[in-house]
Picture (tube, helix red, strand yellow):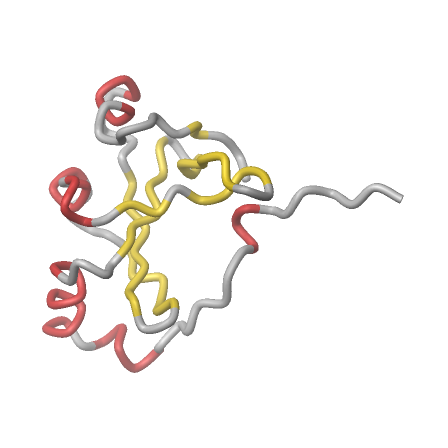
Length: 110
């Protein structure tokens, strides 16, 4: 029996940290934390990269400038204590977005 590949958007177990969502100062601090990772979307599709078990979300550090491209990131939660935000890069040409990664991701429905 063949098993389907894992669904990238179903990976992990985020702690949604409801109380933290109302703490603007802490969210701002987390945006600058080097352990923070971003899930980038372009026109509704997430950035995916090839992992050891198939496609996985391309989690990127905030240092690459994605927060400048999306002034309203969405706090997703904490993954083992590290913040995860979603950023929408749809306002930028795809070719420009792809240059922001060492290896360009695929943007496709997950």
